[in-house]
Amino acid sequence: MSKASQNETWIILGATSSMARAFARDVAARGATLLVCGRDMDDLASTAQDCLARGAKMAEPCAFDARDTSSFAPIIERATSEDGVINCAVFVGSMPTQDAIDAEPDLINGTVQDNFTGPATFLQMLAPELESRGSGTVVGVGSVAGDRGRIGNYVYGSAKSGFATYLSGLRNRLTRAGGHVVTVKPGFVDTAMTWDVEGMFLVAAPEKVASDIMKAVTKKKNVIYTPFFWRYIMLIIRHIPEFIFKKMSI
View 1 (tube, rainbow, N blue to C red):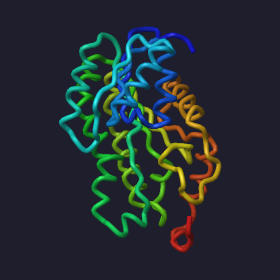
View 2: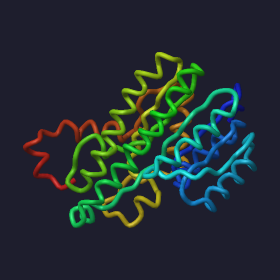
View 3: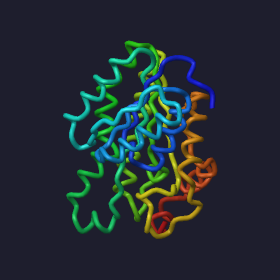
View 4: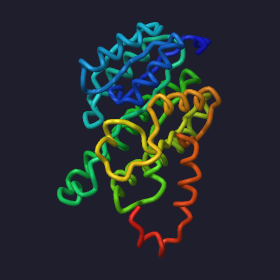
């Protein structure tokens, strides 16, 4: 992969996920500065060292918790201390089973914070800096689960749907200032979130998803499904009439 054409800093939220690590490796190969952010500092330190070995200009672990807004400002302040373009990739998320949420409805709060309101709050705080610099890319990783509420994960899906709507509005805002927002909708990916989940099919490797994301960033795509065939799967699912869909177990 070619080197970055100018100084760029990537904030990677949820950097302990397998998708995020794969994407961080791709960004490192561009010679970028990385802030790898999450809760497991030992894991983040290992990722940072790996990124340095792969060509990153700098890689630094940062504490981030989507449920703790006090962790947001220090990351933004660290990023804004760097010259050049600031980018942000959001891989944050959690997916309790619907059965678990049915048994303990309070789990909804954490699910929404992890998948929607936490990342959205961070990006809302970062947006003025991107506008002032007249550049920057935001990558927001959602899910095909956000395209339609399904009985098996409708709380998780609704949180991802809300995040996708937020990203659409943020894209409208930042485009006017020279920035860009890519909404990513993965299907089933081989990550800790999907291990032991029944009904998985056409499971993609994290490296494939990361590659698709980088291509979308380069081409300034607005919304991508990854792997690509999920666009057509979800097109069919979205168009199933409600009177039929509500009887289906998908």
